[in-house]
Image (cartoon, rainbow, N blue to C red):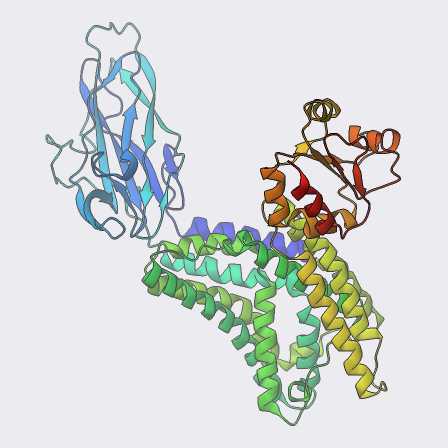
Length: 596
């Protein structure tokens, strides 16, 4: 059922976009910033006559093309190049009068094209060609290149080629021209307005799209964990007081709007003070944010499974303290909006992309409309008690449904973890296990009858374990200080034959102790510096799978039962010095210092 609703909403979104923009001709290029269309001056064209193509540009407000190759950054000014046909021959493009634009980043005035403008491509049929048939069709492609910029960002779209067909006919008289080609490039002659240039303002359409985008957030799986809590609270209060039910529902809506107000405020600050934009999706490029959202989803999944319970303060659940209960609903609304972000990237990214190209006031309104769309269903639900009476009665189905949602949240968390940089995934996974164990301690080792001292002791230990796990597994990985070489028996033999010291680190991806060795021994700057100064050949012997050369050598050549193992070969010594434990950094340093 939810899948069908999502499909219907998606179709509504697409329809909304199409309804509020006049479709350009077939021979057109359309992006979210600019619409480019081609128009013929005459159709058909007589042989050995002159005509032209008009390339119409419709840019979004506050966006522009650079007009001059001399002042355009990187020379990325607007370039239009038509391809000649067998008979059609084009002359130089006729550009409109450019406008002056003050670029804040460079402090210079640049020449640009903005809003609606037209570039003309005059052509004539080749006099040397003989037309032997009644009609000839020439397929013409027009290449369009150039950077499209606003006050805060630039894009380099791949427009491709704009195409049209020019018909050359012997038996026709060229009628009235659709437009007049200016005689000079510095012209400002108006062009006859065509149908597709009379566009309906897209602002109302975009706001409707933003509202529908916000409405669709309510069916995102990430929001489901808080829905049972808030709906049951609203239902419970509706049995006693309609006023309280409405107040709590509106407070929940206010929490949603508060989250989007924070986003709108951040957008204003970034644009006004830093000259940049709040691009939706930037937060997902931050590994800390992604990992934090993954941990939050894991916590909520464990809550769904009953591993621990969230005990709301009496100020939130008390029926007599409506004011504080309202504040609790505001917090839940804020949380619901936050939880919608991992599952709604595509929808919110499209809405935010449009908002960034608009004036600050319109962008702020658009962002708030998204929040309004998400909040409206709750306002309707709480203001109409008859709808609450039709909600299903509580039962075992609610517990099963809640647990099923837990698996969905686990799946989303796994998806987010896999999006992390490769060198952080292992640490996040290990900490997820530690975090789950700590939450299990918190929720199951104590109960309401547990003495207060023991309860505090257990929870302090759980918190300390979580902090220690975060310090061990979530520390930001640094680049390897040692230039490790892959295991190569020939390379090792050549180094030993040349009286060069060799250190071999036998490790495996699945070996937790091996990662500990990396942190406690080989991440020390003094040891790394000694290995470099003494010109020690550092070998990283990977034994993750049994068919690797290092795995075979570890067993058959060095007779070691498992990893981690570190070996230091000293020139003149027959046997290497071996360490099978974790804490041998000082011993290794001592032996390295004795090397020549």
